[in-house]
Amino acid sequence: MNTVLVVTTMLVFVTMLMALVRALKGPTIYDRIVAVNVFGTKTVLVVALISLLKGHSDLVDVALVYALINFIAIVAVLKLVAMGDLGKAGEGDITDG
Amino acid sequence: MVDWLIDALSWFLLLGGGAVGVFGGLGLIRFPDFYTRLHAAGVTDTLCALMIIVGLILQAGLSILSIKLALILLFLLFTAPTASHALARAALVDKIEPQVDTDERRTPSSNT
Image (cartoon, rainbow over all chains, first blue to last red):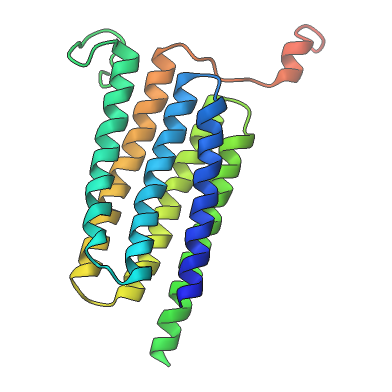
């Protein structure tokens, strides 16, 4: 059983490495944001996998909070990049239309 | 017998989820422009999380742990497509052109 969990964790780590490569060399800012989004989602999965691997069921709470913070961070960074200001609204907003 | 079946299904889901994640990362590196990369990342993100967390729920059994895992899955299933949509929209508003077929671009008047 543990072997399967370790192999899955390694596969997710490989994916995180690939996302890091794209985040470092992506030509546009949006490529980097996609890569960071993938990295964050995979972090949630790694924390959940490690919590079952080690039997520390408290760690699942960390994964739960990380999933929420990751989403908020992506939308906030996207708004900051698109509008130049977190409080601004109007033409070209990511949430209009 | 039933235990063995649940274990086998959970192994299949965990390893399949890991493989789907690696394919998504490969697409994130290899695809040519932003929108195709967003497609690779957005689609595999959801499926990878779904398979791995359902596999973990099958391992955890019926407890508070599996309820928390199901809650993580619920959040991810809502937030991953929303983030992808916001990203595609922001890139489109920022006038990032989708890459079209390069053969037509090279010979614009050959077949008209």
